[in-house]
Image 1 (tube, rainbow, N blue to C red):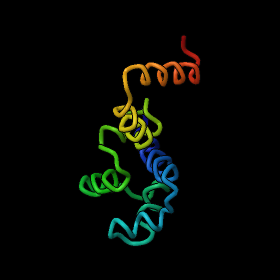
Image 2 (tube, rainbow, N blue to C red):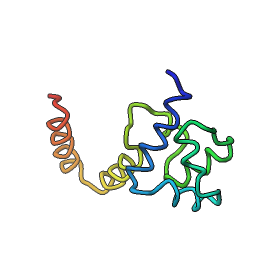
Image 3 (tube, one colour):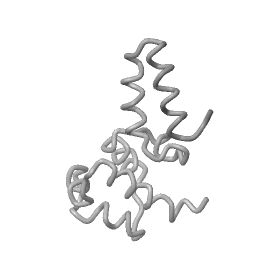
Length: 105
């Protein structure tokens, strides 16, 4: 995988899923208003600590960030928290709905 091109796209994807502007995210991270824009436009990369702060801001782990099989890791966490409140029977029903949505049998 070409991580140098994928990395900025992933930040954009995760940021837009949360409905946050690049400027607001930059300022919330204590950076200049163009910080995230520069990363997303491949002009710079964050430091390791900057990357950790980005993940924390997005509510995900670095592992979540690099998990290409989870396009919306924050939503997955929210769903899992709600699933943990269900009975076994309710969870089975939800599983059937999920499998129907993704086309599995």
